[in-house]
Structure formats: C-alpha cells, structure tokens
Image (cartoon, rainbow, N blue to C red; front, side, top):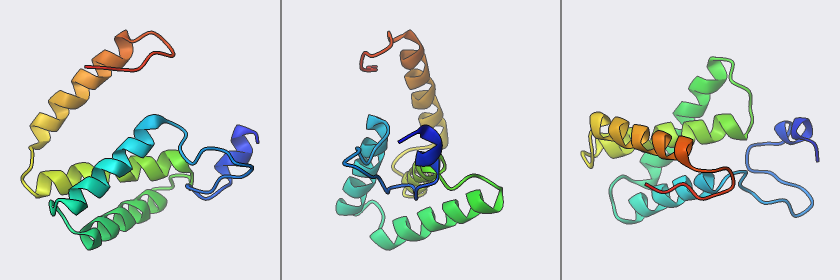
Length: 115
C-alpha cells in the first residue's frame, strides 16, 4: 500500500496484515495512557473525552484525518491529563521533550533513541 493510500484509511485501520503502528512511540504513548488509567491518574472517561476533544479541534483546524493527526492528538491529550492530574508540570515536560529531541538528533539512523 502506498503512503497516499494509507492516509485515506482511518487512523488505526490497516490492511493486509500491516502493523497497526507506524512508529514504536505510537504504541508506547497508548501504553502510557492505558497505564495512567489503570493506576487511577485519570479516568478512562477523561481520556476518551479529552482525546475526542483534541481530535475535534484538529478537524476544525483543518488537520487531515490520518495517523499523524491522531497520534499528535493522543500525545497532546496525554500531556494535558498528566499535567492536570499534578503528576508533572508543563515546564518539566518541556525539558524532557527537549532532551528527547536532542537524543533523537544525535542518534544514528536505524538505532533506538535513548536518553
């Protein structure tokens, strides 16, 4: 399936036994969200409502209905809910995000990114 054809699928739909996730971080961010719900950091309802709202905002802003938009909304929702729960601050997340960005830039292609 070509990249253009893939963009026409709903964010989590795949055909012909293709992987559900385009990148490992996509599976990881959903696993973190699931763990946060399981640990009671926020409720499944809060997660569902927050993600739905983020996706509606993206659509209203003209973002395409593809996996990139979906996972950007997933990440934004997770960051918002974790911050709202008081588990971290926006500043701490920004510092960590920059550390990951720097690690990514220094990691050779094809190698795992580590901090």
